[in-house]
Length: 571
Image 1 (spheres, helix red, strand yellow):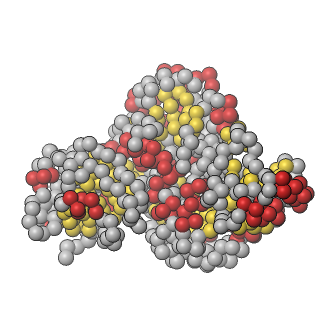
Image 2 (cartoon, rainbow, N blue to C red):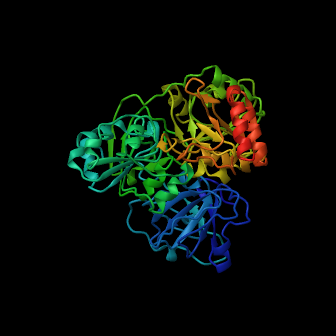
Image 3 (cartoon, rainbow, N blue to C red):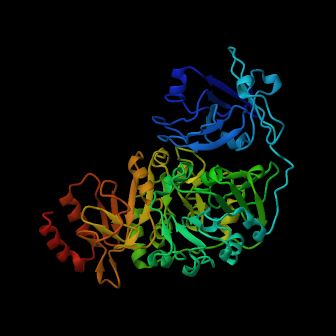
């Protein structure tokens, strides 16, 4: 038996049956173990119950791609790949495997069977490095580029990596690099047909201007306050998506990613930066982009998880010292508190939580201080969750998937939250195809998903992202986690909303959604709907039963009118 670090046992899969099967039907690879499938250009995880790290290598043993692949997914096809390494999720990061580096597979542990030597002299072809006898190859790691220095320049100088027609991918929320985007805004008239793609823009940068949309135009994966007016006026574009599938859209080339602009932590002693504030879809863009430009700020926490970029991948580094973007806790009123009490009463000790952003989800958090041993597997890490950690409610001890670990894909909150994240061994930040994948998230028993909507019809369809046909936000992770909760053993998916709008003049529970409304959560996925007047449990119920249950939690002044509408619809 070889030791865990730095040696890794690699088993060869070279017969047709072995290549087809891969790790299907086998337990999760133990730390320090994996397989090499050769020849191979693409793999899948259909039928598997755990994620794996997939590393594509060419004939010269150069790493073409590294990705954590959730269950029931197909990896990208790499025409130049000669073989694929399959490792336990997170092993590629531990071993220092990164795109552009090289590995060698040999039989003898004494010679170091798998040496990571980035930017070194060419290594022998992998086909020559794998010796065919009865023993398994062994993997040995070397520190990659330990003393390398990043290419430092000003934000204006870094714009040289942007070409006309490029799409610049920017992370969610606090991960957006203000110095770089301000420089782009100042120089926007020098460009033509450049797009900035992002799921949630927090600041109204100068390039967000209809008069210069032909120069630099924003493409929203999700509207926020900074981009909503432009989306409603038509000079900001929108790409419909499930948050969990954005990385796949990028990796398959369905949506472009030519350049990455991102906030990052200072480089560690091994040459890695942490994109801890939002690995989300940005890590997929890192694998695809022609140029990666990082705004390195000492206030950005260095986190564990799949959120690291090696200096050898970076085209330019721009330094900043500014405090990170902050958001406070939303305003919580009596209606939000009433809804929160209904939800909290249905959350069991030992549950794992996904909590969306907004007044009602944060009100729920405030009602959970008497719970025990809660866990976190979420998309957004905020100050509400931090308060549960500080109160001892969140321990992650009862999690059956990644026990002892909080898991998230972006952080948005206070400086206190960002300091809490720094090198915290109880937290891992992962790309959104891992955190939000319904199958992966559902590995958590008793998964509780709490998300808000604006309108629900008698069938349970939720309009969470538009006011009629007028866009307001986006799908985000709501559909991802509602489906995950449905799949989870003992899971519960909550959709929460006040029963009325506009000072109790409009019912948010309606017979049919307003014409043009974008459906976010479908009638087939909905389970619990909660207003300040109670809880309607809809999953498994008939259309008639659903309508009556929803009318019962509508505002009393609208119940007679809604009952008449239900009768007219034969419900």
